Length: 528
Image (tube, rainbow, N blue to C red; front, side, top):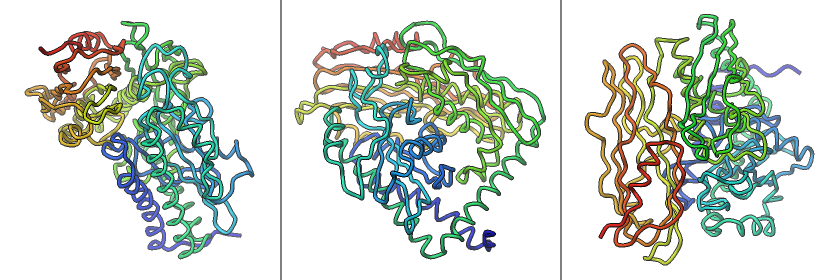
């Protein structure tokens, strides 16, 4: 039976409705979650896939969490086969079996049925306060293997027929340090999935199943055509890019390299990471899903900006991405992966951007400011409760592009402005830390006709008790990428970190940068 013809108005309405549903999902999470990282900073991603795992709508989120979501949905389909039913919710965070990026990012999946037929999946993935493991938060080097990084959930139903499997949730939450807060955040994610289901069912009720599915086929066809047209305009050839993080956090001062070759042939594009380094002992290893997602993020920046929020399965069809098993970009179990969204994830994007800047020089992008991340954990004496905090406050901004200065304060290239910086009042209310300085660092922006974004000077004071500190960052050994008169963004300035009244005691991260290790040593001091 031929698919019905779809008039332009209906197509536009269905297409934009699916985008709006995703935004409403995140709004639900914003309003109901309690985790600072999720509710305030937006370390969360949502999307819609069809009943076979094809990507339908992915307008909002972090690239590493959701651009490769089809691999995760296909995993759920293959694992449960015909055992999925209306009202089921599946939880997955296992990078090696569930195609997630690292353990703190918990993904909740809901199959969406219409009159007994499986038509769609929706996914919400968000960064939890804690996922067990040796240290709070899940970011630390020198773990023996991935099991030391936290609880691994390979794909399990936490709800059946919209009823919670209380024994399963109890087992999971008993293995995290903040079970009540994590429960609230999990319920927020599950509620967002339910909203998505209600909106999609209402959309089908209004327009009919055949019409909605025909609109989706047309959406994919049009997007594929647009992406192929864009690729075909790039001169055939092979373009090279590379980037490195200073080390893996365990074997210090040994750079870890991402090397990519992008081959354009007609209307197809292949990204090959075969020349990248082997997987490492430290926690920078990426599973293939992370490499796939970050590669797409880098590539999509060189396509028509009008496609930015409308990528779907059609966008993926002309693109092939390869990373050899056992490499740092396709790590094999049980390699540690905790820092991979930053240290290696950002290098993947930088290497792809470097290569594509040679292929499409008019759209060349200069280097973004590097990510400096940390986890601080301790006891808040005001309420006598444990806390853990991480922020994006110290991240810089974007590198310049032809015709445009770099965006100020847009955080790092792995987030592309999707996450927020915090605010002083919120931080000081939630955590025993006082912000002393938080400002753009003077005269740090890369010079050029179009300048890069400024660096950030961020300084906080511990006004609580003893605290521990773990750090990760995307420091790079590669030179800044620039084209013409576009200038790179500046990194964050040195970050004074001090303890008031009491010396901070805890575990210092063997962070993966010489400059970071020096900074860490200076931070562990007491103010008298």
